[in-house]
Length: 243
Image 1: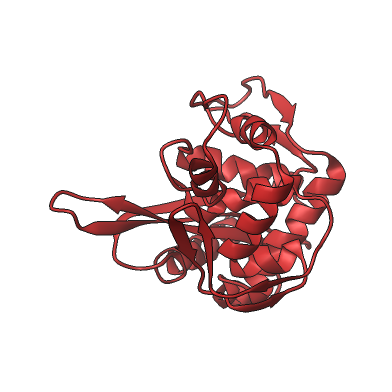
Image 2 (image 1 turned 180 degrees about the horizontal axis):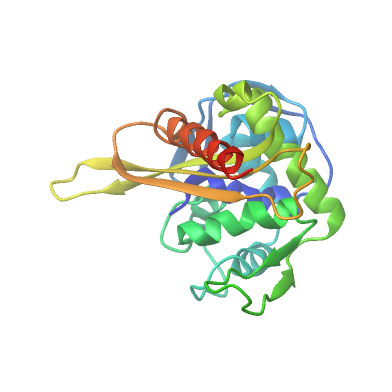
């Protein structure tokens, strides 16, 4: 499960910004979801940047029909989704938890690639010259909004430590899912997806990335962000050496 990376789906579907006060938890049925963020949220972008569970649960459960959520989710997944979900399972799915939502690291990277590419997802190819298939998964306005939200995550949200790359435009989303292991203990699956763009180069196809660390005791910001930092540094060092 991709954890809060999947809040990207709700962010695509929600219409307009609405203020919300997060009290640190949100209860659906018999399940209470905690939230590390507590306080006022002014917009979808702000909620996305700090990964507020309560904001997305409150708005998605009340504003996005289950079938619409599943239809949009299916654009980024190869797994067959159920036709409907209980309210509790829907809440889990909104947060990228539970059995319904499963993606590969490549599928995670394609979410951020589509956001940068004006809403068009490009099917990855293995061989140079292989025909590239494209599919529109969101309109241009939504893609622009998603870019703003993903870049806000780097500028002031859960991955703000990547702000050190002042000459790059970086967008991203973190996510942490729990997995129960033998003996009843729990470990984290840490995710981060995103893209990076050097405005000076005017790249038509800047790199998208997806980092997944399994069986971790740490949250994503601690586990994945240092890896992304090393990848970005090495990527541009490699490009400079080829010039």
